[in-house]
Image (cartoon, rainbow, N blue to C red; front, side):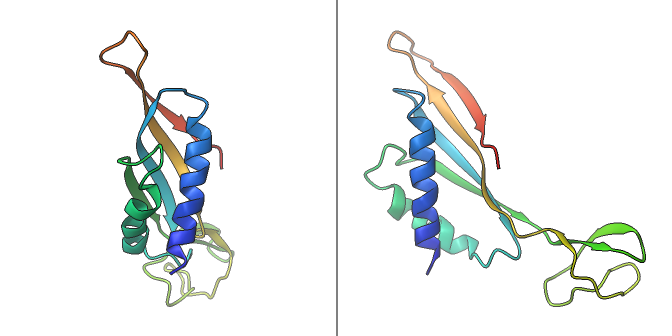
Length: 132
């Protein structure tokens, strides 16, 4: 189960990024996971609770967005989304294509934090986009 090591790396990255906001609390972490990333989303979600336990981001929600496979077809001159990963044929013309344009991602898309000041009761929420 390599998902635990993946989630551990995400926790490390998020904790490091959140350190720039002293006293802030991480509310949500959004991941983009491509259909070809060889990652089981349910396992990621299961491991999240284990990996965040006892850390500064314990209690933060993990949101995983699955990214479909998109290939480029030279004869059609178009990018198309594949219905599955069993066949890498253009859904428009049936031509075999291996020019994958999307679907391999495994990245932190954003981190939502609550910046609560010492004298504030409500706090301010910020969403930090993580460059990929």
